[in-house]
Picture (cartoon, rainbow, N blue to C red):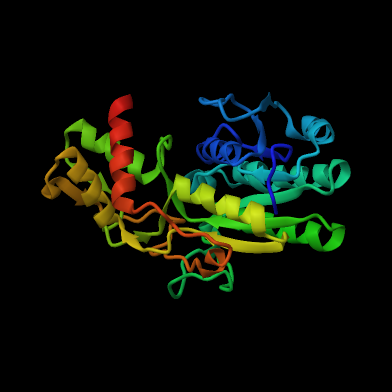
Amino acid sequence: MVITDNTNILIIGASGFLGQGLARYCSVSGLTVIGLDIVAPVDNNHIKFFHLVDCLEDELGALLVKYQPCFLVNLAGNADVKKSMAEPLHDFKHSVQLFSVILESVRHFSPTTKILLSSSAAVYGQPTQLPISEKDRPNPISPYGYHKWMCELMANEYSSIYGIKTISMRIFSAYGIGLKKQILWDLCCKCQSGNDIELGGDGSETRDFIHLNDACTAALCLLREEKYNSGVYNVASGEEVSIQALARLVLEEFGIEEHKLKFSGESRIGDPKNWRADINKLKVLGYTPAIKLESGIREYVKWFKTIN
């Protein structure tokens, strides 16, 4: 699809880590960005029209009528697996229930709008083999993973029954400037403290890290090329990195000797042991990850030091 300056994209969750990054990429690519969130973004330069919303169900319909966006990207909701384990109902309301409001609003007020759902690798749970393919059956091990899967199923429901065009991107471990939570933020905070650095697990756990810029590039590939037939795509780097190797890179940037790194041996319930994605399906659309983990970590630590 050819994107022009008259092509509207509505980003729900535009003030978040992924939302602000995607707004920037979409704006540079010529899309007119409309942002929605319950909080104002730190950087509003790339959002043409921003709306603070108190109740999405009451306000989304009118905004869809007003803008008639070509695309809607749902990046809203809880992104904390640990919190979903402690408060599953909260996670359900901010994922499944929220997405049902989005689907219903599009069905009634802007049925030609194409919906890109931000799902998660958490739908796979603990894989039995690597790399993980989109053909592998979901097997979540956390409420967060189950609820993301439910959202995908709803996308399929509205696509097959009502003809709403949907697609889901299963994002793996996204990181980059602006992310103030999860493993990298935690590591940097502990490195700055001057104390010994202890992490959970044993360090052999692996993740497939994808830089924010690459995640946004992948999203734009889907916006431009996909037929929106309720399909799913892995969004990742396709490389498996151990937490111990990741920690070494961070410690090196802080000039900290590796012997200060300790692991508790206790794994967190709801977290899988190993992840690595098969990204061949996304590569067919022209996607190629561009940012190596080493340079991404260097960039992240430099940013962290400037704000702390």
